[in-house]
Image (cartoon, rainbow, N blue to C red; front, side, top):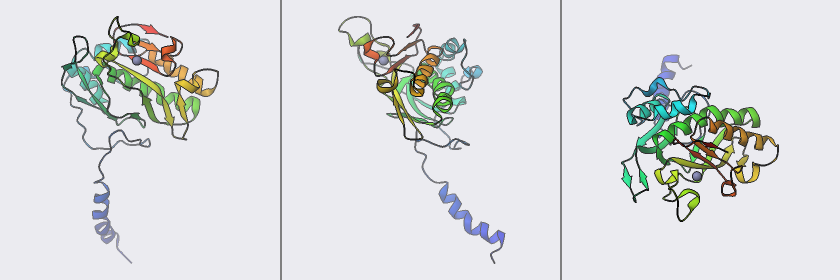
Length: 248
Ligand SMILES: [Zn+2]
């Protein structure tokens, strides 16, 4: 018969080895206590007055904009919510295409879903808005309407040096400032894949889910565009975290 003390001595090295597994950023995780590993989110400002965990209401969009006005406040809001955001150096590719106050959005230790492709570079304001949307809209709406958890949010990119609607002339797109992301759909824990292309139209639960997350986005982002706006958005939601105001 092995005494309890002896069992602990035998198991201790094994248990400590289990804890050595490398954290894979942005991997899907079950709900539950987050890993206790430190993350490079930093942030020394006082922007924590705004919380990513606050439910969406009429003041959310303005609160996101104010929280992101000072880089240190913006980093602090993300850090307080355990969202990994690693600043990248400002850079200008052309006169109008530039990345400023941006960073790499890594794992959000408060959610299950991952972004795919992982590690998109975006403005801090977009990272805050996207984190609010993911926590307060996408994940709870999928559970409520589709009865499943979100494993993955599929996007079509953030930064692109181009004009609005990819026109030859006109004003530069928010993508030229890494301030907008195009969302193609989500993948659920039960294997379902919901896409704007296939599931937007009709009155199915999938369509109701997509409309709900579009409507919620309108309360968070400056500009939200869906297939209801024009044919150029038939396959994605354009979510833009700047001061423009358009919801369609
Ligand atoms: Zn877009």
